[in-house]
Length: 57
Image (tube, rainbow, N blue to C red; front, top):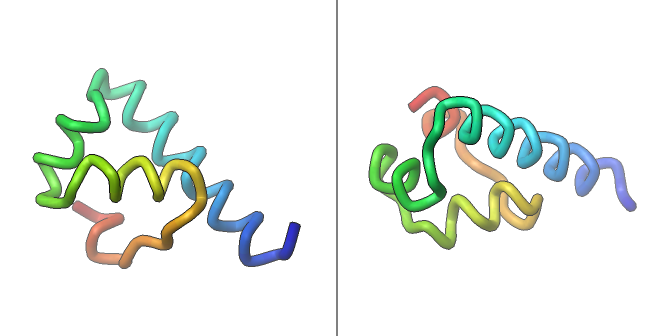
């Protein structure tokens, strides 16, 4: 796994952990930050990077 891919995976894991700790489903989180559920899924799976602005939302 490339270094960048590993970082994306780690960020996705962090997002997933935080979402679950907050008691949110992927759909609820997506609605809260105005993105699609698929976008949240891809971020959590390390397939998509997210902007820093989305991160802070």
